[in-house]
Amino acid sequence: MTDHTQPQQPYYPPRPPYEPTRPITTEPGTTVWPSGSGGGFTPPPAEPAYAAAGPVPAGPVSRRRAKRGVGLMAAVAIAAAAIGGGTATLVQQLTSDAPASTASSVVSGTNVSASSTGTVAGVAAAVSPSIVEISASSTSGESTGSGVIITGDGEIVTNNHVISGASEITVRTSDGKTYRADVVGKDPDKDLALIKLRNASGLKAATLGDSSKVRVGDEVVAIGSPEGLTGTVTSGIVSALDRDVTVAKDTEGSDSGQGQGQGQQWDPRQGWPFEFGGQQFNGDTGSSKTTYKALQTDASLNPGNSGGALINMNGEIIGINSAMYSPSSSSGSTAGSVGLGFAIPVNTLKADLDALRSGGGS
Image (cartoon, rainbow, N blue to C red; front, side, top):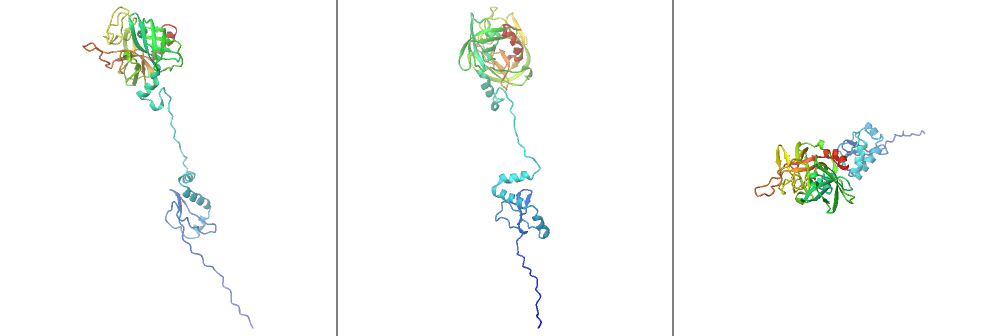
């Protein structure tokens, strides 16, 4: 009897069906295809944060590509989708060739705070503590002018005609304190004078600028004590350069106009007499006079502004106000500024400062 054995057929288990997976897009331009450890495709998360439609091309080539080191990128991409924009941005930066850039700004230092640079209010706040009111008493009476603090211990620059002939000088600072002052030096030829406060310290000194850089049309601020109104602020522009201004050299009067050394008189309600363009303003300058180059400004100046500061928009002193025209009306009252004011350039002061400190002028 012969055994009859049926030949065994090879067993081929059925391949499980699967649905084509969809790619996960982490950021525009970056698409990741997830893969499983068993060689097949792993279904994507139930609700991926970013999904792009489109099936994976079937076939062995696609399966082989899915195995090539994509698992790590898939994990990073899924984590990015779960955590949010911060990680997603990191992934984008890691896959981008362009470096991240940062922006920075540099603010140049001035005498005015950065937030107020270029404003009249900023200039006034920065420089007003350096401007003083000067009261000078003489045999002719009392006069009022202005001055600029240039050192913390009380050196003050003013016009010669403000303190000329004074027997007693009193200075009031912006905080209301009063000091007695002595004349250190004066230069009638430039209408400049230097006085020093007694027992002063910790004062705010002004910053002296460069008048050679001033241009016609530059905005300026004037601070002084017109008519005794301490700390008055006005503004305007530089309207001309290098104007020849002539003023009296020797006087016992002042900005309020009490009388000249030559015995001549002028209206005390007007400013200091000066000559400009062949004309006389505010009275007769007399026979003893001097001429200097001045900055012309339309910032309002009135009697009492003499010796005060003309300031640029960085808070730097560019001139010492010295002459202004205030015509009288038919009733004799002062009509006010008509936009004709003059200041001694600060570079003239800086060149003369050592001579003034030594007791005289150059």
